[in-house]
Image (cartoon, rainbow, N blue to C red; front, side, top):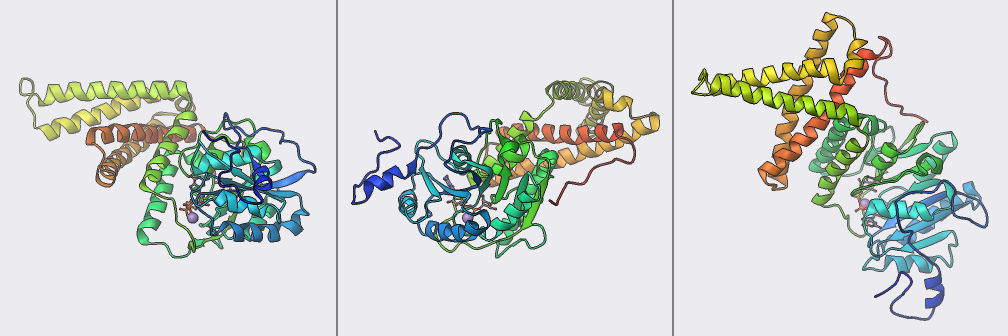
Length: 422
Ligand code: GDD
Ligand code: MN
């Protein structure tokens, strides 16, 4: 059994190298409101998560140090969080600490994954502002200064974005662009209040004020730590800075198909965690009543022992009636507060039209998700259908809630545009 401090393969300067390693924080994934003590105040802590970045880490540390030293007058730190890489990135990094005293290194064992690595780094961080940057130089280090400026101008969160002025991707294959866009659209549908706040919710290059996330228990999955920060943090002002996502020159990307599945699960988890429980329970109950109506009509209209109408016709009438049933119950019960402020019969009809539109989009999404899961990931079709139904229920709930928020809002204050600038 090795402990966190065992450094195998003893060579000359081993003791100092081992001493320069920080223990990995344990326990819940929560950043404390007051930072661990430091000899002098630290304003900015930048976490550099690494896995097999031995060929990149040196240049990264040198460039960040050059950039930050002047503007921050030494009040910063760099924290490499390495998941015990086979290429010994942690060792290469810890050797650099002699020349770069602002650098601290965590060699993490037992726990793995990009998002948790970032949070563990922030837990060890002493700064008031917490940042993250990829180690592979795909995030241009210079942009760090723009992010810092945005924070100093008052942003709680400053995000490096590929989708604002000055941003872009250098040479991405078509399918990667499509996937990236599709992922954002799906996120927007499920979590408009989170994903809609930034133009590049997939970004792994950003800074956030400690106080905006202090005390919040994080529960990240996969790669997209920014979703977690926006979803659970208390973020008022958002700043965005354009950057071009460079090609990787050394080492390999760790992106696999599993990360796309993780992303879906992450969206669903955040959605569920931020759900108004009582209202969603009513919505789900109404949904079940709709299933009962649909089944009953399918039997009455289509069954050979009853009216024996053609199957398609029976199903269309059954589904349409179920939808109307659901609308009436949701309008009178689930969203009664919004509906009451929503005005007369004409407005109710308008709500029904919107409602029907959402349901139509839901059906399309249902089909798309089913194909995506069975076609791309080879999932069992019934399992895939259950996942699709779950996601579409969340999707419908999010959009239908919106109809009622809009109905209840005073006419002029319609949908507010997401805040884009610092
Ligand atoms: N500690 C640790 N543990 N670090 C990891 C792990 C892990 O399990 N997996 C990846 N990393 C590190 C890599 O070494 C690199 O520094 C960074 O996280 C990003 O990993 P890549 O594999 O290079 O990801 P990418 O090039 O596809 O970038 C995507 O993710 C980024 C998230 O930070 C894109 O979505 C970027 O826009 C995004 O910024
Ligand atoms: Mn990369």
